[in-house]
Length: 221
Image (cartoon, rainbow, N blue to C red):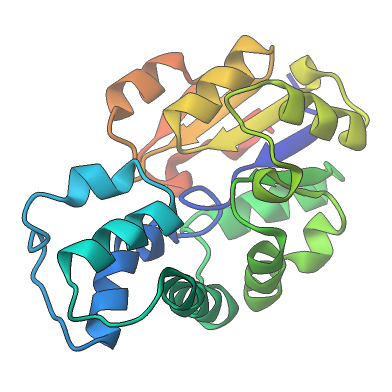
């Protein structure tokens, strides 16, 4: 079928940016003269990946008491690391320019739903030159205090795009978000990203699954 609109996730889907989050504690430690190899957090990686940034930093500061700063200062420093990445280093995932060009050629509007803060999203879109394409159709779950585990945020974007869920294709890399969209009646195109721990399940629930967006058949749009 021909879709009337599209919804993109940002990190790991539109942008090759998940690495900044998984390596954030390592970069913070490097700022304080502590260099660790991968796995050098002594098995803490699994614990850190389920914590918020602030809670992860609180944990790291306890493990490395030689970093003599308070939690607020640590959080500010990590924000600077992340902001610098989105403003100056963020890159589009391979295949995305072709998908965007196809959507533009068919006058299909698109929006973004992301867990990332609005300030970072806007900086990244300007950096990669997509701010004009998405215009004001960007929703930050962090800003809205919502989650893609609930269909509500997808429904809000569908209303903004003036299309029904069955008329919208959702581009995702995360199983939890893809599952929510699929259950709510959206079509789902999913892409592999190393950050997703259950890619087999993601491939199972998606209407289209690919290792890279370059593999996605554009005639589905």
